[in-house]
Length: 304
Image (cartoon, rainbow, N blue to C red):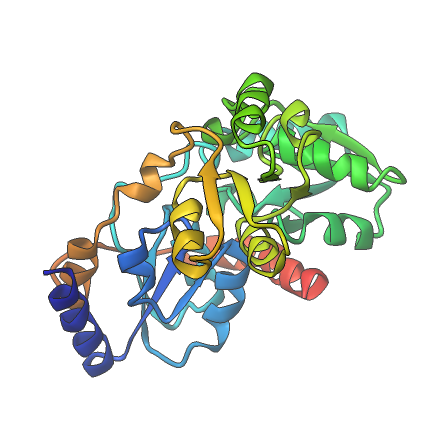
């Protein structure tokens, strides 16, 4: 049944000039039919060079918005209209505008997990894989990092020469993981390396053998000489690594490390999109797009 659906999608996307993008948190069956799979940064770069006229984003809304910002001439469809991001919606433009008044000489660095509107007040955008590099490269000595306080804390430690102002936002899925869960996982799997996403709390990150983006975690696990790994990010990464590295063992840090917004997109959703019956086309005011895309383009310039 799954293979039949996949083959239908592959046939239709070829016929209709459709590119399918899948974030790494998507299920394995969706990743298998995607043209590109990766984290937000990788997908944002791939979007600019994809030749197809229509793009289906299997991810969440801010990712589809980013695709539209970079490729306004293309038809961009969010595979499931209900796939949002709680972190992206934590702050609005007005709140950050008020904070900027208090810190006028601070460059605003926005995590890519933000709305298009919020990106209009940012000087540069970053992802977990590029944040340290970009913050170091910025000419400003003062940085207002939004919205993830945990990622901001991690970047601040890596870039001690800069002054950081952090706000109390973040990913609710990663942030709920506690130090005690890590210690319990390490006790259960004493020979396993602990790989963690920097959206986790500092006391969790401090216990890691490797800290990085989802793509970074997967790459580290694939090339590492280690045979056992505790994965401190969304549990779909455990599944992907089990397929990629059958000779190694992967353990979820917690059964609760699940992004329900990512999981809401299904293979039938993608089929519905390629049939022209489902999803939501991303329509963006051109003035908003022009303002918001500047920080994305700066991200690609500094993070490339």
